[in-house]
Amino acid sequence: MDIKYDDNTGVDNPVLGQEVDSDTELKKWLVDYVGKDHSPGDNNVTVSMIVETVAKEFPEFVLVLAEENFIRGYEQALDDVDAGRKEYELQLESSLKNEEES
Image (cartoon, rainbow, N blue to C red):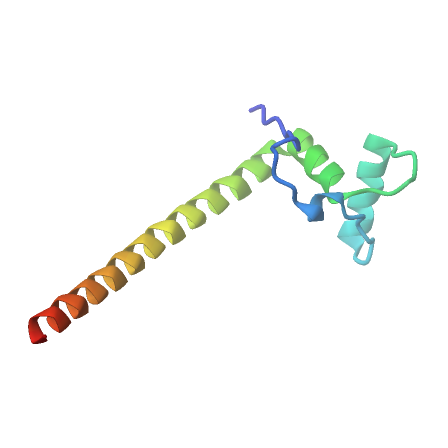
């Protein structure tokens, strides 16, 4: 399985540029690992670097997160459309009722 991470999507997510604090054991290990992989000149590891490394080294993990995020977003969109349709129908019904009364 080959997943290519490309941070040039045109979406400006400020979190990707944030430096990561090593405030847990997992973060410390991950920041050290990614730092060795990227060798940043300023010794600061960003979220974008971590995403790139995890996508390269553990694509199954990134894929399952992306799939889950897509499915949840799609379900939310369908729920929003349904709620919007119901609200539209209520307003239309109310408008028709007001016209009949006048």
